[in-house]
Image (tube, rainbow, N blue to C red; front, side):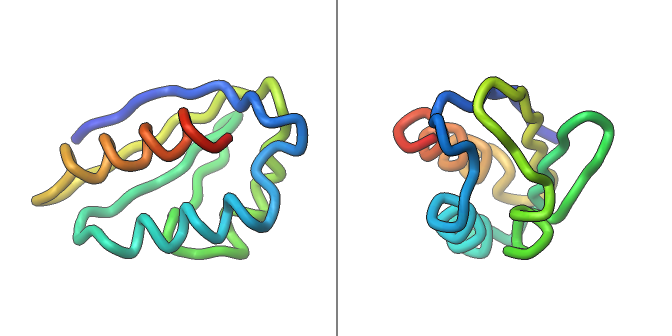
Length: 85
């Protein structure tokens, strides 16, 4: 299991566009990737679940990947968040 924490910098938070791109990215990996905020967890492959988290600027999220390609998955998600959100 690999995981990291990230604090959202985008003033709009994780809105529709980045949420959709995150879901698309997560679906490229066989590992289970989850997103957690304030004790609430969702599957990163489900758009409505990611958007339902209501992630705003300044909030810290924890991303966890577990599976055969977890290292690559976590690296890709962390890179995406750092560059886009």
